[in-house]
Image 1 (cartoon, rainbow, N blue to C red):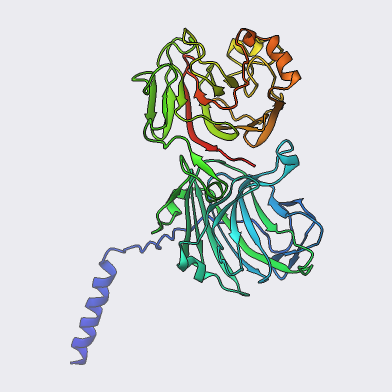
Image 2: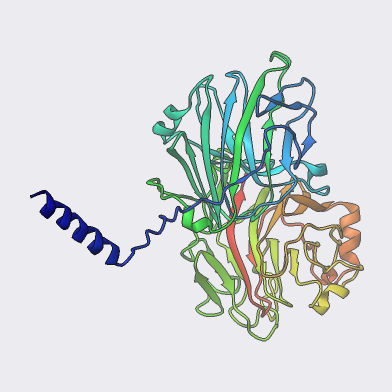
Length: 461
């Protein structure tokens, strides 16, 4: 019996030795390509701008401390970021307000370098809008959390909180402690720095209150692969009012879909050709570059006295157009455009009109056409990208703005204004630009130009 067992074992050993060897490959782990933005020991890679709040490193965290008599302070990344996924943790004093800046900028000509851009709010107050989206230094609240009680409840007072922030194309998504918080569609700014804010404090607030950030990491490669879905419905800013605009008395002047509120300047209805509505954009189509010779200008059906008008515009190479105000369509029934004061829209580099005009430069983009040249230091985005024009007219004081920067102002009906008119092509029109109220106009000058986000405030302050 013993001999049989030994023989059997030998046979099994021989069999096992003759079997093919199967290599076991290790299971590949999908390593998320996180990059640390903070080394835990120094502030290397970060620069402070704005106010003079204190930033130090303690126990592996960045500590921000409030200081009196200083504006908002920001510790900003030296690198600029466009699309990314950012995660971090923070603990904030219950009496503070703070935020995480993303896609933000500080430019000398914009309010003397004021930091502006998207801010992911840190809000330990009873309002509890932490992880909502605020537009620092520009438009105010974009995605508050008043309709997201789950996110409001997710904030942990006097404890560590975790944020996940995704910025991919025109889409911003946030989570607080793994709870979906904000979902915003907005394309105002494509890139900028990341910043850690210490908010300014009032006289009654204690100096030296702290917020601490740690474990700051970012993904910049294969971002879509690591993006998370959110159950929230997106808030879309295109052709919609922001929360701050609604409270400030603004209204949409174009709904982004129909021709409601507009007609042809020389018609009793909207032009049947020459204009196109597509993708939330109102576009005058290219024809032959002639003034109001194809579809023709379009005007508002309402008239305006004091107002602020905001319009996004996008030029094609070599294009010419304009935004006119205090228009009376009963003036000039013949060829050409309706008569009114004009905020010039032009490709200054390619269109010959930029070198013409009664005064040098008075036909360049943002200028009061043929009368007053806009500031030459204009923060214009390149041709093919969106720019935001703003025209303010309050008690005859008129201002032209571009992308948040004032580039021109004048007093309508003043002696200086009347002298300019008398020396211009408009001198043949009696009382040019002196109407107490008039229509607003988008010009057809035979070139392709697109408009969107057309908003007006009829009672500006």
